[in-house]
Image (tube, rainbow, N blue to C red; front, side, top):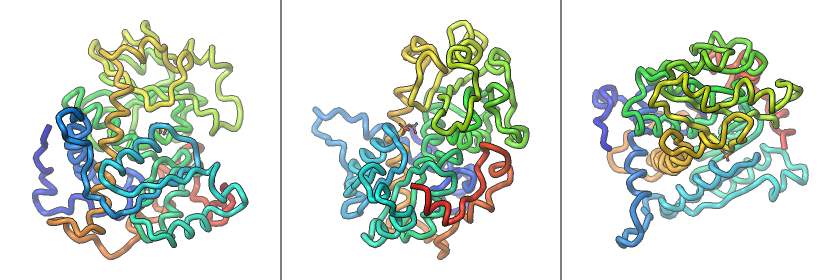
Length: 371
Ligand code: CP
């Protein structure tokens, strides 16, 4: 699948004038589309059968060191960033919080400065605190990719979701996408609101009142507390897990009750469009937010395809973010500022205010204590 350059890029706009990928709120729609278009080539590349003698290996990142520093658990994101880096030829090393000196009391910022002193060319960071990745990025001399920070953003997840939708449906603009479940604690929802909304989808937030941010009306999405109403006519249904690790109290009476009113069942899915696409970023809790039979029905469910798109999207991001450093041919120069994304406090207020919607920017001390 090939795409013509967006008119803004054809007219001379820089395709991606950012040192880091910290969130989608800082990106223009054509910059998002540029990353999606770049990812297409890697989907085909990754599908190459090995028996044709074409190894899934491209050397454009050869000699570059990529550190994946994950201070929170991950299966999909960590592995796909590692596979993506290796397929592009980078030297990839992983740092997990359980094996790091963070466990011995080292602050996060000291850990970041330690990583920086090893002259990496790219750092991928996941952290449990909203804003932590941006604060770390300000201390580092190389591109930083946000692999999920607290309840704030998970940009590569939203990009892989958008790529999945675009490939399955042929477009994003005009589609009705219902994002259902624990919106309050979800960085995936936040990034998808930004991305899918910017690309012209009609986005719905569907959740019990306790799992909706208080300022949901300011997020530019249509809000539903009744699941059947929220699913009515939807082209895409994206289910979210109850993120109990980020909850500080009881938000639902029980998982059984939750499934009864908000679980995706066959009966409920009949309210959606006949050709509805079902998605889930994972990890899934079968029988809590989704009936396992729907998740496994590959005619409707794109769950494993989302994982596949994740490798392609991350290859595209690693490639694009290292082009300046690699002196890639025909890649326009970046602006000299290395803090182009701006502090978290400058994010649109709709992403900052209210419980669960981009928590207040943590101070360096607070981040230092976050271990
Ligand atoms: N979707 C997602 O971020 O999954 P992991 O937590 O397994 O990386």
